[in-house]
Image 1 (cartoon, rainbow, N blue to C red):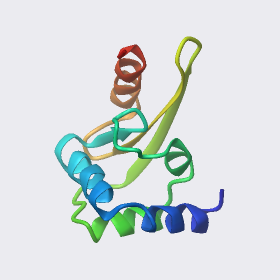
Image 2 (cartoon, rainbow, N blue to C red):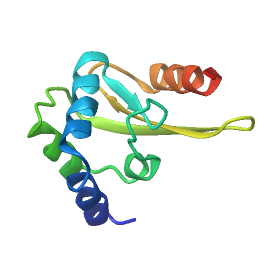
Image 3 (cartoon, rainbow, N blue to C red):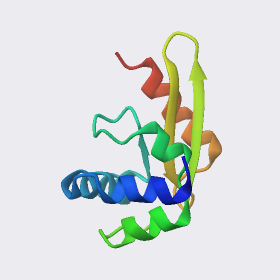
Image 4 (cartoon, rainbow, N blue to C red):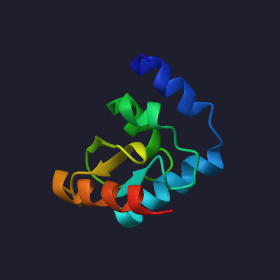
Length: 103
């Protein structure tokens, strides 16, 4: 998926759900494809600065957003988008581990 297609799909997503994800990022600094919001792993995998700019229109106030993913043999892949002002790769990995362990 191209950067342009990722942004296009996010713009076509429910504004209410975009706001939910932005609110979570502002509160916790991290969101995953396992957070029951319908935030697609493919969007996280192909995240770009234009997507972050779009989130800023919904009130995102954090820093640069990075992506992280991890494969779990008994769960599959889990992806996260995280604010680098609040998290580093280690804390993002901890978050992914918790998500994969959740029923």
